[in-house]
Image (cartoon, rainbow, N blue to C red):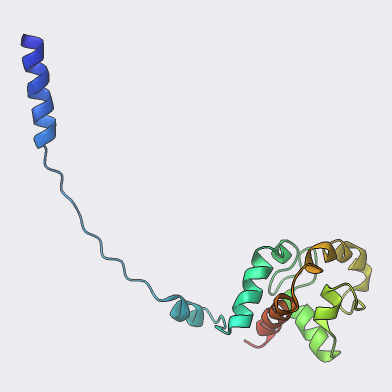
Length: 136
């Protein structure tokens, strides 16, 4: 009986415990404001291209905006295609000649298995995103 009374007393003490609740108000910028502050274009095609580049395209694993990693930087690619009036979409379809670093063409060719399955809209969006890097 004493054990039961002790148990009930313990349960009642814990159930009556008042917890102080803190209310936190968080304000965030809208995605448009945040993107503009970061210098990122809100053009829908550029946004789609960025999503593909960093997502299903897996392009980010070899290409960075301003730095050569495995492949040339996005800025270098866009600049060369712009200067030579190249067709990036045709290249990503596997139908164009390499303009940036022909010695790495065999490495890039393996990625055509992915990019050949992209729609023309997706490929154009990738191109728009890459050009947006040098237009900042």
